[in-house]
Length: 151
Length: 430
Image (cartoon, rainbow over the protein chains, first blue to last red):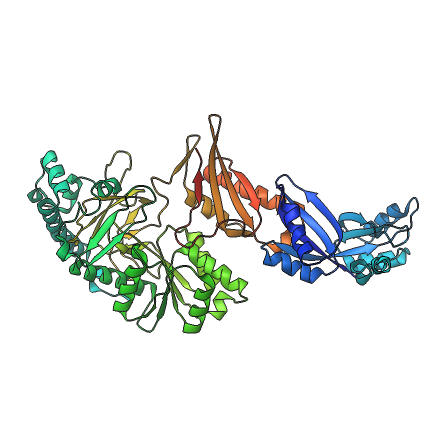
């Protein structure tokens, strides 16, 4: 159920994003989502790929410090109040949200996918079920079946 | 274990031997080395004026520059046919300093090494892997000969080819590791990359590290990583090579082989001798050397001397770990900073690797110091706040210890250059 996301420690220097992503490119790994958290001199690159363990291994071989962490992917309905309802429910269940970003899966209807890092994913998934928000399965994020239709 | 009874003699007896050896050395230097004869004549000093141990203070100092300007053999006290070995120090600028040994010097060298490896717990049942580079540098050959005298099985691996070193250490079942502390850490890192746990998959039990200064934090790191008793030893090619002093299992300082070396601590600015226990520059007169009898050699190393008997049973003086060098002390906008202080702080912080780089620059009239430290902890890298906490913690600890605010750069693991010999930690661009 949980998505394996890679966090890579990078210095805030020109060319480092290119260096990291080229490692993946050379090895035919497809990036599903990418986001950078910016600090003054360093940042965290968070990526979801079609092959998390292989990607992590390749990056480590190149000397990067990589952490694989679990994140939760959900698909809230596209209407006012959905997000507010989600955060209220999580908060009432005693769950903290560490960070959030949204990804677009172009071929997957019109609903964006929201990636959540919470203090308790199992419990958060349970809360989502209770309030009727779909939780996206791991495989659905890694593979993009519609890509293949295009080919 | 104690190798020689000389290490346990009463202080008066040690001092009696020292005086006897000092007198002979001064005579040899005066008679055979023009440099010393001239200097002593200028000072109105004769070898017969040395009658007590404290008279050593009357003698002139010797510096590395004296050796350089007498390159290559000007300071030698014996003709070439008496020399059986040459070594030289790494001269990065100008001439290297060249040293020579007579047969007797070689015997004394082996004896001093035998003492320090025995102090660390090495016996004839051990297999000793030497990762110092063989060549003009004294480290490898010095330890090699002394270990053979003890009867240990010596593996003369030399430096470089790190992965092969691990394989040989593992396959030969090495129990003792000899090398620089920074290269030893690199070996450990490489072993881990090869999927080995250095503490479990290698049979090492003792490490004798030297060739560069090492902090207590670094010693602990080596002990923990390899699961060994890690000891440090001290020496420099001008004095003999390794073998001047070494740590016993009490880890209460490095025991000096005092029948071969007379140690003093001076104020590096005034040249005045300081009382026991005070910190200053170490000055050593090797008192049994025939080929190169130096008088009061200024090591530029900062330490202190302690004369109380040690719990190990030795009565020889102990020198504290080197707290820096008079010439690697950085003056940052008027504040004295030793790279060893920076290392001590970094090694006390979790999540930081063992390699670091200090860079000093000038911006306008101000000195700027920056420290690159490697992030090696996987656990914190998904959290920007944890990284920022680490960054702040390093900055605050540096300020507490150094009294200044260096700029701290957290850098990607393994981006800093690894060393195979002496680590180059400081880049001074001023």
